[in-house]
Amino acid sequence: MSQFWSPIVHTLTPYVPGEQPKVNNLIKLNTNENPYPPSPKVLEAIRSATNEALRLYPDPNSDLLKQTIAKYHHLNPNQIFVGNGSDEVLAHTFQALLKQSKPLLFPDITYSFYPVYCGLYEVDFEKVPLTDEFEINVDDYQQACGGIIFPNPNAPTGSLLALEAVEKLLKTQPDVVVVVDEAYIDFGGDSAATLIDQYPNLLVIQTLSKSRSLAGIRVGFALGQAHLIEALERVKNSFNSYPLDRLAIPAAAAAFEDEEYFQQARKKIINTRDALTTTMQNLGFKVLPSAANFIFASHPELDAEDIAQKLRDQAIIVRFFKQPRIDQFLRITIGTDEENKRLCEVLSEIVEGK
Image 1 (tube, one colour):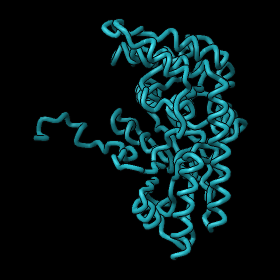
Image 2 (tube, rainbow, N blue to C red; image 1 turned 90 degrees about the vertical axis):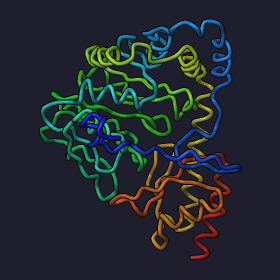
Image 3 (cartoon, rainbow, N blue to C red; image 1 turned 135 degrees about the horizontal axis):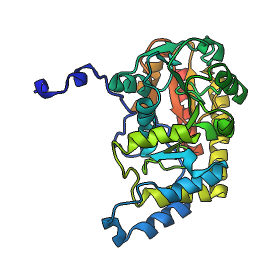
Image 4 (cartoon, helix red, strand yellow; image 1 turned 60 degrees about the horizontal axis):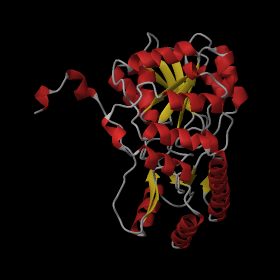
């Protein structure tokens, strides 16, 4: 009965998230979730907030969380925007800041939600190819445009753009908004948040889904000068004036307040990532340098899709992207040491059986 659809719906190609199969004893390394639980302080905050007050609407401004994030990043609360996961924050960003008369620029291999948002909000865009080493070259973005967006580290490649290169881009494109999507920044990079007070065209977007183990809570946020945040607030309040609920707000705030737990968990993931990289290289895989909680790898003698299927047959799932330039790569989330040990055992068997 698609004749009842609005015309634009016919043109949309929705984003396809990593699958969430319900399989016993599954080693799930396909959606970049954190293998470790949230801070105990987060769980306590949720328990404390689970009371009769749930019948009331939450704070529409999420003041507690904005103040917490502002303090953490040495900013002011009016420089903070929060939403239901970074995907919602990104959606508001595309509508509020990136729908311009000139095309938006982003990498050809990047977060696949970007072209989806462009289709939904009718944003003209151009893809800028990554280098042969699958890295972003900021010199390639020195062209007329309506805005620039890219993940840092990039996804699904995991490559990191140095903070100096980000700043170069901000300086050479001062008349357009530059959005740095930092979903994975805590696993190996320096946040561009430190540049916010210097550059009125910079918006930084982060999430609590990855490094703070809160994918199930759905909290993301943007950092930028007040005039950019005001644009996001205007769009948000024309869409949903109560985005974060009474459990998410204190849970997210508690995650920022337990710095010791956060540092321990992220360091474990970084160490495990480095160990996995070495092991896979010893098995003959090419592994791109990663600053994220995943690696991007290919084998010169084995087909990536076939590897993914053989892993699945052993109850291990990884992410395979059937698209140009990367159809021989697998993106593998960093699991626990035990999960990665099993992964490497199966990969060794696959390699030996080639």
